[in-house]
Length: 254
Image (cartoon, rainbow, N blue to C red; front, top):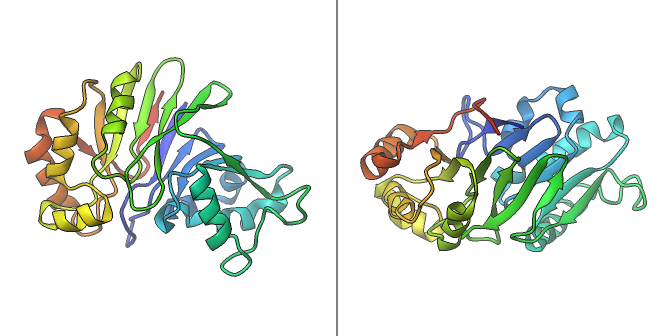
């Protein structure tokens, strides 16, 4: 399995793209603005989208994707999420006011998009690939994801604050090769991080102390204009875990 980073920023501007990962050529993990860099042919091959939560920087491309390629496909795009997330998408995005409801187009019996409700801890298997929603602690109902093959695993924290439940999963995951974890704010903005349920470098270091596994650690969701400062502070607070900044077009092989 190959996982390519399409976007990993906490905002936009220049080359910055918000959160999305392309898994092989048929799966998206979140669908932020980075999806827009794919070609039309690549977009048409997306069959599955796993959503961590309903915030716009993680779902912004779903409406455009479905609208763009629906006529090119013979089957609906499947959108996976916990019940609370899917309920928000139904009520506030695909509601005929912000965007058409593609679960009813061209008609309900053969729609261009379908929702697939998942539960935390229950894996979804697609061929040799397994996706499991894991707990996150955010301002809206949210999850991260454990992505596994027979050989290795990657864990994506999603947007989260302090989260003991995450580390139970991390420490129990066999063959964990990579951990992608957010750190949205610098230390001077710790109060904002706490209020918005994100992490800052000192909080990240406190969280990593709970980790018994030894994966490679990558930092995502850095705010535009503060990436260098935040990563400097990450190195100072959490250097013994050798965290690195996640970058667009970076690839992971599992």
